[in-house]
Amino acid sequence: MKKLSFLILSLIAITFTSCEEKYPELEDGMYAEIVTNRGTIVAELFFEQTPMTVANFVSLAEGTNTMVDSTYKGKKYYNGIKFHRVIKDFMIQTGDPLGTGTGGPGYKFPDEIVDSLTHKSKGMLSMANSGPDTNGSQFFITLNQTAWLDGKHTVFGEVVKGMEIVEAIGETPVEGSKPRDDIKMNEVNIIKKGKAAKKFDTDKAFTEKLKEIEAEKEEKAKRDAERSKKIAADFAEKKEKATMLDSGLGIYFITEGDGEKPNDGDTVMVNYEGYFADGTMFDTNNEEKAKDFGVFNPRRAAMPGGYGPMPMPYSKDAQMIQGFKEGALQMKIGDKAILFIPSHMGYGERGAGPIPPNTDLIFVMEMLEVKKEEAAPATK
Image 1 (tube, helix red, strand yellow):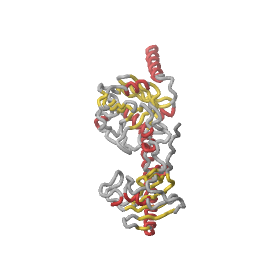
Image 2: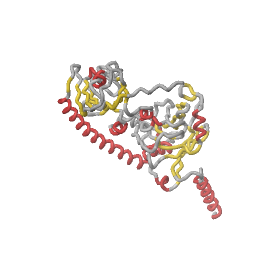
Image 3: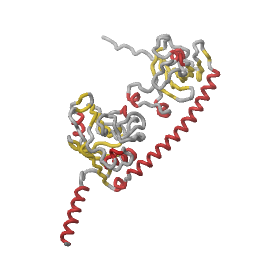
Image 4: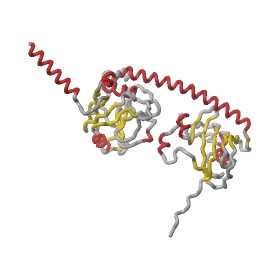
């Protein structure tokens, strides 16, 4: 009997040790083993930097998530789910139980953006979403650097083994962006190595981070509201002192420069900030201010000249809203002015993007310089 007990204990110990030694080359941390019908991918999960997102992923993978729709309760959510979207040289996407790109676990949670975690290269795991704070279960793995997604999607992991499998999936034939043949995650297993990873409590991590994010958003909303109120009051005061033109445009000079008056047809470089009457900023070409006011666009930042001084024709025929170009024509180099643009000189009844129909606009514009024409290369 003692020999039998010893044998059983020995077998348990061997089994336990073999499980612990899976991927022995991996350092301490938390990992997702994604076993697909095309091969196995292993990704490190950034549980310390993005605890809420990783807690969500892990609880879904392990079938312990308590927020899921009743259909998925107690089930290992990711097992059997297809890669429903594949775009060559861009990314592969999965995590939708419906396989259409419209499905999810039955709830949504906020973004958990960390500035140091970016879509810097191929192999980054990132949450798919339909806009800010709409994360659920869908995620994608990058096939290239995709910097324009930074700030819009939560990066929460990175492939450490099996990148060749990710790339092979990225090469699969598709119709539109849907693979012709089913590519599935047969199972997703979570591997925890080291004390910190093993102590990670998914429920606690999710709840605490969610509360922290909601508190930060509430505090930021208060600060933003106070700032907008002050800006609106300042604009109202300046409007009382502005010069009103026959067209309905108002202009108030903050600074009057001593530069030249541009010639008709010149290209001038300007900085601008666009506001609504309540002091809310809707656009600017100043990157720092865009980030500060919550209107930063990573895709724009990744484009040449996306942020920085903007070239515009100094002409009544410039392809811009009437109030903006008419205001510019009142200015010379070195001037900084506030333009009070009535809706009929802005975007009128149609509106545009974040600007509702029939909305008065306020622009702070600074005219920096006349852009000099580049000399033609010398010829022999």
